[in-house]
Image (tube, rainbow, N blue to C red; front, side, top):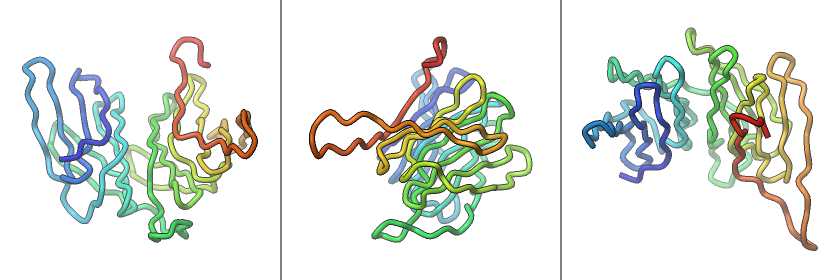
Length: 196
């Protein structure tokens, strides 16, 4: 049913978003089994998924402006409606895209690709706080070990390091290798040992 993204949980299982099936599917490598859990409500196109240290799966829902929270212990999904923000896309959606989990406080961070926003969700209260992104068309994002958030700016051709305590950002333009080329970073990652 159009699996889009997967992440390994602390329980050793793999959690996937079924983008067309509107479900979270769990694969257990211990017995090669799958179990699928429909997402209730008006979720349209579950997208990027991450699993936190408490084995809660968090995922973006790209076309209905939600972040989802799936608890495998209860099999319950909670949809968190994101703040309204102007869409910069022709279809008129804001496209919540990348999801990252803070290693410092466990907060959930998302990027709105077509709204130039990034936001934080408190994992306990589910309170949402949204910010202007330091880069245009923020897509994928990741945390480093120090707790700084790195964001790929797909339409501005750069990446940013954000201090989430102050929301101060340092932006790094990507090199251009050919005349007329436009850098369009889609994703980034932080090496777990070197932090490169």
